[in-house]
Image (cartoon, rainbow, N blue to C red):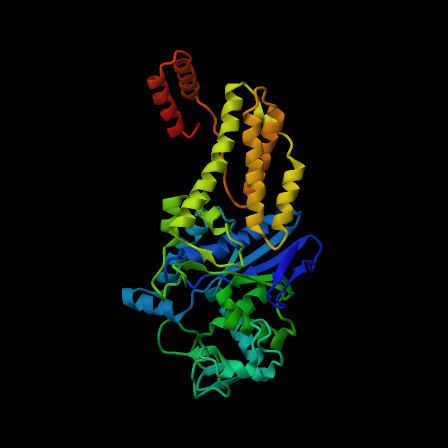
Length: 446
């Protein structure tokens, strides 16, 4: 397995901390609204990465979080005049429905509110070691104490100081210092020795990773490209301060979805809710679309890419339906005949997927397999064992991509419809034949 490591800006051979085991953490959503289709991309990307590792024989421990403490949640709760937990639980449930609709496996999930005691203890340790300081109840991290701050985002400290992304705050010792704790009178809050408030965003993931993985360094830390700085950079800084570790050996970041050349985001207002896209396109087409570009590259989301995904998924499913429908009509027991995979095709697909999750090349292998399958079905004497082996191989490849295929089982009515269609063709009653053919197509049997 080769992966692009953002920490070193290079593709590296993956070497697990423990043989045939993978430990992976991916930053989850702040739950104040529905997930847009761009938020669904990391769900699909890292679920697929897990599936590839499992296909390679790894045992995977995958953890993700829900940020259920945030100003946006509080503002939404105040607007609706409800408790914050009503908002957070509503959108946690909605996010999980999106995950399930995308046929993604559910990782171990943790909430910030369930980790608060550990977060407060962590901040106390940072204060005790001099990596943090308190001013009027707020607690800040001293970035100046981290020598290689900026290594993940490949930025120099002097450039960051004058950068527009650093908020002005006259209370801070250094404009780069970031909040670990914010004292507040508004919304949900916790009592500490320095003041009643809630944690800063960057601290939460460090603590949850340390807790869920028993203090050990993990193999992979993932998330969207927008999290590289400042979120992941600040995670590394805190982890180095307390644990003398940069958390993970490999840092993976997926690219944005783009709409008309712009990043899709709630702030820009150019969003499509994931739940609506999945309802309209179906889970398979949505997932196929989200994996159609390399995970690190931008992915265009428009009518053209949607239609292409629908067309490609349709070709795959039609070819698979054909082999199983024809097998049943021919009386072939495909459960017995399809007991082996085409190892050559399977290996070529895995070679693409283990090359930094190269899904475009993996798709090419699927299309090549579909071509061979269609050719096999056009033979006068179909070699059923070979054809069905190809079909089951394609189903296996789709499963690694998280695409669901169900083998169609013909009913007695279906058999009768095929018989009537063939009879009409033999009698050259093309009008009737067209009616039967249309009915078979509506049942997705042709």
